[in-house]
Image 1 (tube, one colour):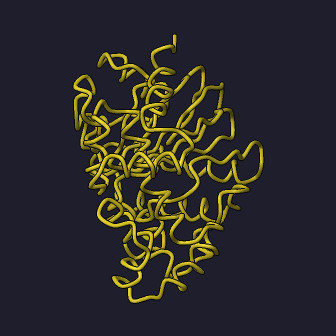
Image 2 (cartoon, one colour):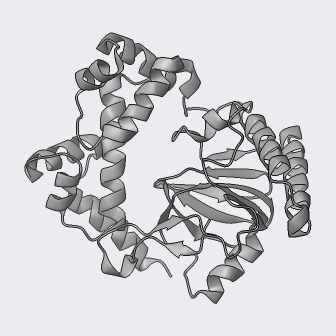
Length: 306
């Protein structure tokens, strides 16, 4: 879901995942843009970019599929797209249109700072974790979100001097709160079940996963016991705190191995491993594959794609 106008890296160099910040073609409303998928793909074609290009974004994207079919990948999970599919990609996640196909719909982009700070929706956009895909089908929730997105499109489409950023913010907050009340997909856990302890832990983990993997360090920094963090993590994810920490480190390792050409030793150092052999043991334990085998599988699949 690529609509920003600025590349944060050169994927041809192989040393970093392409990163995009929020720079739409026009500053119609700072921090916000809403377009349709056809416009997005046409914009990409004009710039000579492949639709399946792997990239990170530094902003949120919400997409509601209203017609056709396709596939979209978010952090190694490929989701089928059909009418009623809702996709939410958060800052820092790695994604690509695996097979754009004929999928059409509404594509909403916004920075974390755009939602109103007085709304609880502000909290929702600051959380890095959440379901990437929901299949709403023809359920009533689909009609509600479609109507709200239509109102956003109508306001955004007014003459520039008449557009109200406040109305857009409040409508966006309503969209986010409507999504928040949807049931969590089966097997995805419920981050809110972990309460404040889990929310604070996840924020600290996002800041520090590359510098420490010790549960005791996180407990000390946050003023909790390890047992408290474990209870919060089990409630939210079904996993103890150490597994949640290792899972976050493992995810970043997979991203870097699959989507960059950085040497394994460099990736190991970036993730806080002094010895590459220790990183290799950690990664194999976490994924069941060596770093080299995982990279070959992921990058080999991509080169074989027609």
